[in-house]
Length: 221
Image: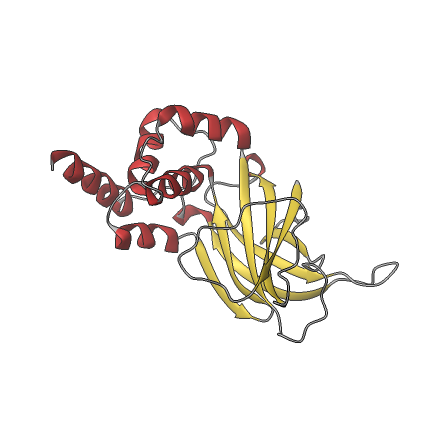
């Protein structure tokens, strides 16, 4: 019981005192992230994740999610706990951080018309724009994960993968674009806009903007 109450206290304390995100986490911050991910309080985990999610609802974009190093640990610990494996700890978290470095991941969730003719997730362009900056920030790399059939709520964020086999008779109803950005190049308390553009033609015509989402990094960890 004492251990459960301790985890509840950690989650409550974190949610009450959120600071700007950091790409370099100390052992205490890592333990806080693990405690949130392994919390048995689903409503508190949902409350934490809402900070990192921006609803867009402008076709074809449903939402944009940000995964910082801190949230990456939360998600990994949460995935393990959901599978009844609560062994995720400091060592696994440090390995995860070492593999991803300063990387910030931007998940752009898409939905397509059922009669679309796409054979894969379109090559939409994702950039980060900050007011007053001369240049837009380009991602280090981009992954595209198609979705066949309806989206199922409550599932974890899709992971980058190799070639995906089409879903048989199911049409591609959506997908996720995962843009990997250098977090060390971002202002920890900055406000950015994630901009999605459509670049078409050979050579490509000027990109037309499809949607944008305002992201406040000061509200994240």
